Amino acid sequence: MFIGEYNHILDSKGRLAIPAKFRSVLKKGAVVTKGLDDCLFLYSKEQFKKIAEKFASLPISQAKARAFARHMLAGAMDVEFDNQGRITLPEYLRKFSGLEKKIVVAGLYNHLEIWDQEAWEKYKGRAERNSNDIAEALGELGI
Image: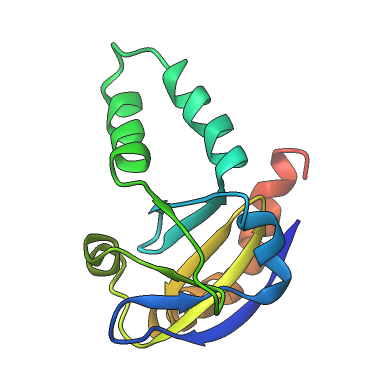
């Protein structure tokens, strides 16, 4: 299970250290892809395969299903860890998510999100200000 919030630095070659506590799960294979809210998603290869299978089962006749599958799958790339526990984020994904230097890696149960620190702080601030409304809406879903 991925949980927590971790601050890291993206080096000039696009390499990012992943928190050590997550590496054992991800060393078996990892996939980074375009996420939502201008961040990247990092999945174990096993978890990403499950998600890709769900996309494959969506009706190809629905434009929104095709668009979201393209967003998640066409933007994906396998990543490997170097000896220092870093992955290299491709330039097109760094550009998509606005990653500069200061990065936040956030654990969200079955995947990690990779955020530009400034964007994360803005997003987190908005979410915290609206936490009562969010909780109420989730209550209607049975959470």
